[in-house]
Length: 512
Image (cartoon, rainbow, N blue to C red):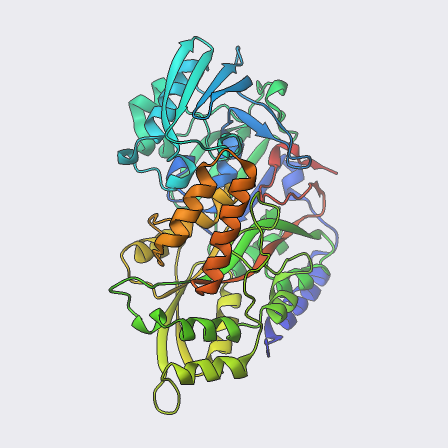
């Protein structure tokens, strides 16, 4: 697959120019003790329940806390806002909460906050954006000032994972008063950073929470200030970090990252992530491209994608090839027996011919994407070689998601980080269990996933997930591609570690 080296050459030339112009590092961020971070996606909301782009997940960990904490290295669970917990039965969890914790506005943390948060997000009418994170919650009740009982709608053994991830706790009095809109405008949590300013669509300023309790498992940030700017254009991000107007960016394209290694005041680090990449097909009635209902067309597209070459040239050394729609470390992620669709353009052209395409009859369709544009463009080029003309529709995630949910998208180039939840229930069901983003609507797959989600027997869960993942590939409902790595480019004076959950832990960072 020929992938142009033009961008790499530009990056290297820019790096050389920076070396000549900048000379020694000025370390502007270090001077005023501020990390300046840019991200390409604009969150719909800073309230963690009302967005599902990665920056929203990052914000959830910066500004808020959860009942349970999972160590990102050992994967061990321990208490965060909760001191301890126990299963009363298959659908009931009891929590003993920590005392002496305060929200950023001074409101005391207690059982009322947990009860209000759970009862609010558990109601479908309140429209939490990613329902799979909360649709297992039936209700919560107060047993004492620092005791809570949570009832589940069904047996859901993965609940502990979610309670250690996306299910953050809001202050009940403030949230009842301002709601999601007010929480977005002036966020309030218990986390290691306080959000002091949110210019919607442009930037967020945070300051270290000097009263953050060590018992919660994070720490008082070593660097006092954090500024986040939303810069959708990658080239602008690159220029800004090279000009020392930014201290930290992530998700940098491989060719640009290689080029910036030559800049003396920068460091380039590649880190593995749990984020998987795949193509998703629309098989619904009313789909804008009915030809995708033909399994031969879907298999042809799968055979046309040069995954290995894309990983080598566009993704990174630490990426993993995947054969099913989940990340390999997630509980229940098993690709044993699932069909593989090797890169084979000859086979792809034969399948297209069998499906009635070829000669003067060409297939034209749209591919929707919201990030990793270079990867989408590479796939579009590969599809052209088998007689498929794909038009790129590139947009912000919220806009793409709206198009998907109104049945206007034939193929979506998806990435999914599972909210860093290390369980298949956080990945595959989001796209294949009749939720809003399910474009296949296959009842057999749905029922197997439901069995995996709700069984309390780990062996039964694993077998159900394995069958569902295999069936998705047998029916070619999607094309699993690879996991993403993230290339971080940072001020050379900044000390930081990377984690597979794709969450930069700014509260751990320090100046060298």
